[in-house]
Amino acid sequence: MNNEHNPIAIRINRIQESWKDQIQNNNYKVVRFLLDDEDDLPLINGFYKLESSIHRSIDEVLVVMLTDFENSKEYSYRLAKDWILEYEKSLSKYPDLPWTEFTTYKDKILLANPNLPQGHLLIEMLASYKKSIPFPTENLRIGIVPRKIYSYPDFAKWIEKFALQLPQDIGIVLTDYTQNLYYSPVMNNSNFSSYSLHIESQNMKGAYQDIIRSGNPSDPQVKFNNCMLEMGKKASAQNKNGVHHWGKKLLEVGQSTGDKGIWASAHLIYAGFLFGFKDLSIQPLLDKGIKICYSQLKNNDTSSLGILLQLYNYKASYYSIEGNSSKAWEWFIKGTQEAMKFQHYMEAISSCKNAIIIAEKKFMKSDMNQYLENGIFKELYKQDDEFIKATEFNYIANYYLSNSPTLTQEEYQTIDQRLIRLYGKKWRHQAYSNLQTTP
Image 1 (cartoon, rainbow, N blue to C red):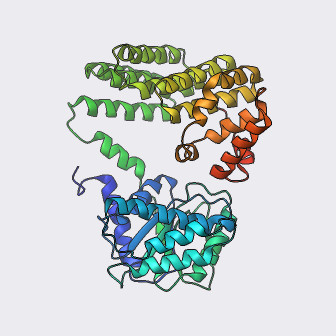
Image 2 (image 1 turned 135 degrees about the vertical axis):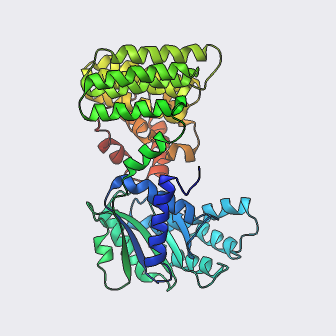
Image 3 (image 1 turned 120 degrees about the vertical axis):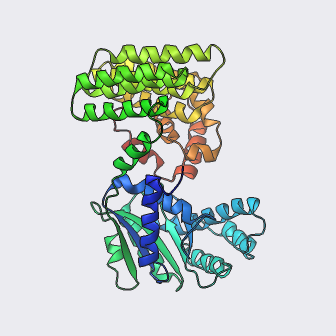
């Protein structure tokens, strides 16, 4: 798609131009993107992705880090370690990268004690990296965008302390929201320079609609997208008849494509838009979608497996809405089993977590325990550390440790120690406190 007419690209370009006008060549220690609308976050992420790649347009070097913030004591070490790991990945693709002291700092970080503050080592490493940048006049900006932040006040304090120690030509980039203002204490600190780059609402819904509607009106995909948009409007207006009108058109368009995956998706989408109306046709629509997916699986075509798993979860969720907990649990388990059969472990963990939520709230622990003891826990536990850490497996592990009737003390300690290493010392408390949302 030509970026000149791409609504998303146009919006990201606005942010790039604002950066060039207001930030570039200024030695701000902290730059904060301040968003009016949370829907605009994908634009900021798009800016980060573009400007930290070879396609960058600003005359500054941006490196984005996603390191989780658990506590101030360990964060400098974890950030430095992740920096080394990411640089090592880049080296495997581009062996001629110029940071000659990489090996030195890799060794220093591997030998460092992760339980002690390592801010001095992080600053030293960043200063070394900055010297390797081919264009010495360009600032180094570090986008610190944790995937998870366990305490915003603690994180803001860490940012303040870190900013005070940074050399002249190295700065931090953060993302904040006008309704939250997580980093106001940082921005109000007079001991270093800072700037808030205000991003007014970019009407992302309008951008998505422009993209969805673009193309040949006779194209079935364009017709399909248009039906979805119209259904969304009718659902927002609480117009049930309108949802049915466009839902039936969606089914017709989906079937006309000859692609069973699209046809099954039409049933999933139609049913989803009816959830707010508690309509009697919801479960039949989902059942029909499942039947279509099964017809593909019988022919060894797994292209619709992802849709099938969503259909299972929709059925389970709607049973939960109706108050039929046993059926909801049953369908979350079916979704888990189907995902396990095809080694879609991420989806299996998500469905299993939802089954646990039902079991916890509706006194179905014996059913849940029996299912976990039948091998699902051990099969998921066998996955590698990097995968486990990126999932919600901690919820399943917490439940298993709390309820397993067969677990030995030695097994308990082995599992607990691994989860501490992956999620932090408070992993069980975090898992328990977040298991509060009804699926």
